[in-house]
Length: 171
Image (cartoon, rainbow, N blue to C red; front, side):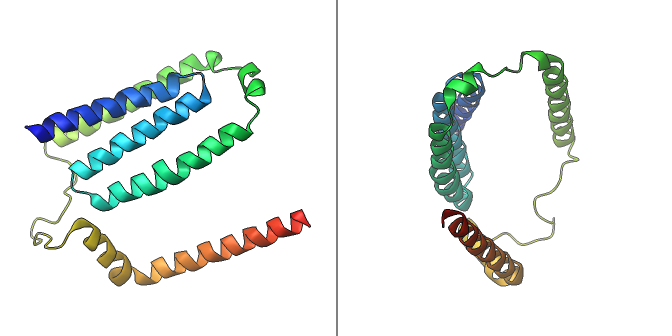
């Protein structure tokens, strides 16, 4: 019972703060509401026992990405941004996109209700005996070790290239 109440509180907080993200005119207020949205979604992850996703959501998105957003907001000239045209002309496109998203959501609910949804695990598989974070670590560093290492090398090369290019522009 307490878990359901917590779920509904976090879900309502995520929904209300997501609406406030897109309705606020002040960019800093929108960024703060986005942080509230991301934090409440991370709480939902924790309630679903997805500890790894919770940690990634808090560290990466709430911590790192939002700091980047706030720096960009501080560096952008907001006086020019306020004077630029808004989206008043695009109501037809917004309504069409909203109808399309509502139709997709309705279809997903219909598929889930009638039992045609995707199975999360094969029907004959044994239940996991290890924790969620341990299962992710095992998959990354045993099953998919080569792709993870290739991706890390590519990211390292990209980071070194960015530093070299930035150093040339400074000198």
